[in-house]
Picture (cartoon, rainbow over the protein chains, first blue to last red):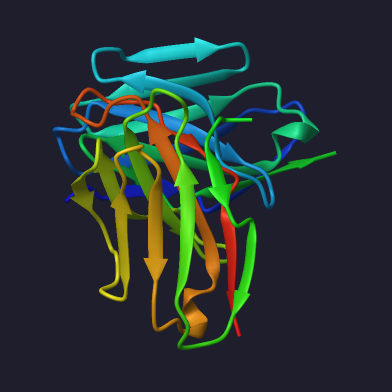
Length: 109
Length: 115
């Protein structure tokens, strides 16, 4: 079955700097790769997603890249702000949606 | 508000007991997914139902079972509860459930504490 590895588990960046979170997946049939943000005690919320026919997608300060050959995808957050502090989950989807273990992002003042 | 409704929000029960968690998907969504999130842990996929039928199963214990009813709401039954079952249980829903890659929307979760 699908396995999703996510790195790093914890990431601290200075406010205003960029943050990058990387994920790899195992099932080449996966065709949809969403990213979710989860604040403490709340539900995960979709922030951006990418499908297998696209290599890159951007939405304001957030971008995602996908390399299907290498089976890895990454989340890039630029000009980080305090409200970006949260846990971020990547996921890979075929008929199951399997999540990575999450990255706790700390934005330092 | 995602449109996915989960009840109860909080539940405290004793070891050995049985509980039922309920989920109503977004209007029009046919798929329901259940995930377990323990403290500082990721989202463990339990099970997926599509239009009343089981579509995929993850790391769901034999003590746990689920079903999706004709009105598309779903219930997750947890029996013979152990301390380690204490977790946040999320339900999520999506329009479809096939191989097209669908965005899933999470409910607020049900906090289960086993004492």
